[in-house]
Length: 435
Image: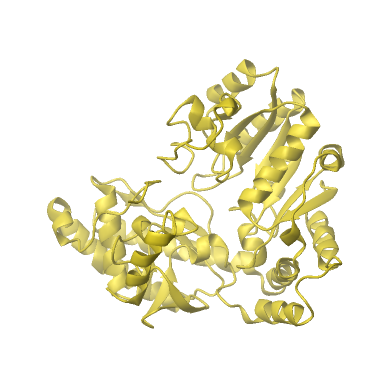
């Protein structure tokens, strides 16, 4: 127990849920022992409150810091903008420049709105799409945030969202009147999607989905969704908050010739600074004129400046190519380990620069917890998900793979009694209420 762990004990008493983001809860990693707070972060190195240094081979700020923590070029631009005033009675001109840049990258789009977070951006997009369609029901595939429209799916079925990303999400606090307004479908499930469209055809005006996350891209399914939504005049939104700017400078959909009516970006767009964007064609985005969508801090300057500088960095240093190569390099090393040790664990599928470790052995949560525990002791923030960063290097990855081989070797030898080697409770796998 150190300063970080002790501070989290205090936090749980005064902050409901312990943290502001479920994905950063220590219980999602190593309950009681995870270093919850950081003093500094640079590149892929993180120092906790006891000044212990770790290499981040995990979620890298939940996928936000593609260029690495405290990137010098981005920080320099942002610091300059702060010195010139990050907020004013007038608007920051960089928001116009960023809108122009996003439209240039996505020639099918005509207009852009901005927010600070992914959840905000999704809700704005849903509002605009509903306003255009004049219909309230939404079909969705994937994880789209914490707002009422999304969690209302669990009013229809308490496990409605379990297959999307996070199990255990409760609709408590969601107006019961929203029941039967949002309907989840699974990626690649034609029958389920078509049934929703058929059953709710009179009132369903919006389909929102992630283009790709941890599974391989299903181009035929995406084309089918586009064909059906076009035929029925349903607004199609691609949520690229997690996938955007990781396979392409812009959305993945650009690589495959599938054009949505709207697309949403965040996370990697600002390299750790708060910025999200909603782009769309004139036909749909014009509806934003008739709906009240407004917030003070959507006009704050630093996010726009960070995004513009991040895009410049992408283009100058071929970031996409680099993080994709590093992702494949990690996968190769992990695959060799799992094959050598005859473990039913894989790291296949999904985006090249987002490595997901899929544990198919018995007691996967125990294995995951033990892996996190042992890698932490070896100086790594590690889990079953790696958001690859431009700041990673082959040397750091080689060191990571070396220690992974040691840890998974212990797993292979102790499958039946692995839980006895844990120094912490088993990690959580979804949403739990904290006492």
